[in-house]
Structure formats: C-alpha cells, structure tokens
Image 1 (cartoon, rainbow, N blue to C red):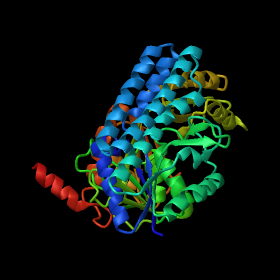
Image 2: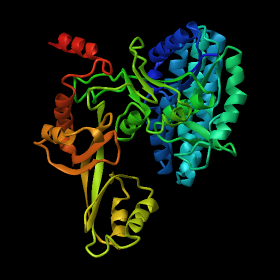
Image 3: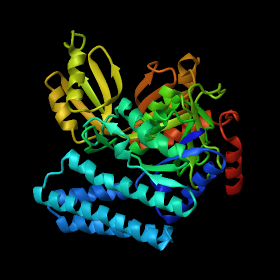
Image 4: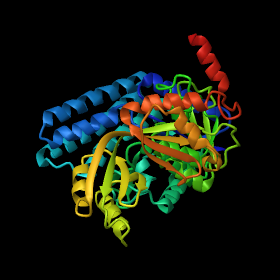
Length: 474
C-alpha cells in the first residue's frame, strides 16, 4: 500500500474552483496507484470570521454574530451547490450544512447571554470551519469519481485539554487511525478529514492552534507510517526568501528536517513550526507543493539533505518582536538569578526567541503582546527593566554555518548600512540570527539575498525557474 497523506490549506479549498483543482490533484494520485488520506483546512478566511463572530457574541452583539454566521452559511451553501450537481446528494449536503450552522447559531446565542468566551467555547466555534469544509470536499470528490469517505478528525486526533493549543496524545492517535482510517484505505476509499480540530479523551472539541492543519497532516502521516506527507499550499515550496520582498527568490528543491524546522519557527509562512516533528520521528519525507501549480516539484524535506555549496539555504524574518533589557549590576551572576528571570516568562506563557548576556545585563527577545507591561512589572522586582517594540529577527539557515570561516564577516558586510541590535551565532550549527529594526527588515533581506544567492547551487535551488522569471520580466 503506497499511502500518502495530502494536506490542503485554506486557499486550496477556498471556493468551488479551488476544490475542483484539489479534486484533480487527488484523482491524479489515485490514478498512479497511491492511496491518499486527505486533510483539509477551513475555507480561506473562515476561521477569522468565526473568531469575529465569537468575539461579537461575547460582547453582547448577538445580531452581529448571527449576521457573520449567516454570511458564512450562504458561502458554504453556494459552494456546495456549485460543486455537487446530483440533486439528491446536493440536497443532503445543504441540509447537513444548515444543521451545522443551526448548531453554531445556538452556541453564539448562548455566548451572547453568558458574555464569557472561554477557550473551550472558542475551540468549539472555530471547529465548524474544518467540519464544514471536509464535508463539502468529500461530497465534491465523490461527484468527480473519487471514492471518498468523510472522517471526523475529532474521532482520530486525540489531545490533552489545553484548549486553543492542545497537545496530541500519540498513542491514542495511532490507535484511532488504525481503527478508523486503515479500514477505509483498505477498502480503496479516500478518507477526507478536517485539520486543526481534535478532541480530548472525554470527546470535548479541542484545536491544535492556528496553523494546526499542517500538524494534523503530519500526525496522521506518522500514525499511518505514510510513504510521504504532502503539504499543499499556494506557493511553489520553501523559497530562499519571501518572493514579495525578493522577486528573484529561488525555490529550494531539498532541505533537511532540521533546517525546515528552524525556518518555520523563525517566520517562514509555508509550514507550521510543529508540522514536521511527527515526520522526523518516523523519517517520513514531507513535500511542500503548490495546488495552483501542481506540476512544480515543490520542496522535499528529508532527514539529511545533500551537500550544498552555497552557505545558506534560506532567509526567514520574524517581525513584531520586542527586546527586553534587564540590568542588575549586583545580581546577574548570583546563583538562581537567571532561573528567576525565566520563571517570569513561564508565568506569562511567553516564549523567548533570543538571549544575550553581559556581566551586568541580559537582553531577551519576545513576541510583542499584551502581556509585556505585566512581564516588565514582574521583572522589575529583580532588576531595572526597559523594553522596545517594532523589532525584527532575521534568521539565516544553512549547512554547518558554525564551521565556515569568515561567514559572519560576509553577513555583516552585506548589511553594514543597517544597525544590528543583537546577534546569535553558535547556539545552532545551521542558524545565524540577528535583531534589527522592523522597518529595516525588507532591505536587510534583499541585501543578504543579493550577496549570498548570486551564484546558487543548481543541485539545491531551482535556478532555471529564476532565469525564466527574470527573462519574462525584462
């Protein structure tokens, strides 16, 4: 059995035309003897609108919340009607959509009465996006000759009860996948399930956090020991930089799990940071592909990538960060001081991206968020504290950076016109990072890209595509 897990993002199921493309891609896999398991996100922008409806209801705006729901109902009904021509199947699907929205409206009415949006209620409300899209996609597949079977992801992906960012329970997922998905695949069916959504062991709906549909795909792929995990997006794969910033950005053909994880965490939008962890455990290749350009080979993420003669594979940027400076002339080197500092961040569940220390001070970078004033207040009991926002972290990922003589000098020569606030090199063999002003981020990326991707290795980068792009625009 050549089993492949195919995850399609919101833009790949955003409307009837996108779902038509997705169906053609899946049919192509079936035609080549593959056994697909399909994971879909909510239709594009639906999760955001569901969150807005939840927020409106929690503030007592019942009419506003129900109006958002009504617009979403119409969108899903219209998409279903365009995709399913069989009258009986169409009527059944539209009835199912109405039942889902009737239930959602009841939740919103109740929320507008109690005026308290708990994480548990939030997860329940946003779950409707994937529940609806997976039902529509399964019916659309059947209409087009694919023997699809809808599977409720909440019966397969089991998590703890940390609502809004639940942690998967691997053993339970392995068991449920064997009980539910394996028999469907053995019968020649194509299971279709929603990403992002899950449930705890009591059956209460949870979610894996924003971007969690990728994670679902990898969890299911790992549980089924899939041959490959395919992440279908609206870009050609992992690029050497954001193409909106560098129009001559190159597609990376192959990259290691470790390098892809660094890029995902430090701002690359193609993958959710946790996505590849289940794949790493089982050594399952992950392919990043473009549903709008399915003939493109995309990016292949594997355990050990081939040697690259270029020093870097890609440049990622993480914006909207803050630098926190903590100065304590007498306490920095005292026993237990750093543990007290990090205990404050743990208390506020605020992850730290970069740390730099001197004899009397420590600087840390964090995502800018509403907790910063409270974090600073707590830290002020230990030392003098200041913080600045609107910073960006530039992360350069490549092979054995730490072992390349003079690489730091080349990097900072390329951006000598830009003020660098913090530097991190040595903590990782494959990552060099530094902090700059957010307004300088795009210029820094362009300068670095021009310096390090002037003569790219054609074995690793899609050089021909760049030549064609530049020729067509000249």
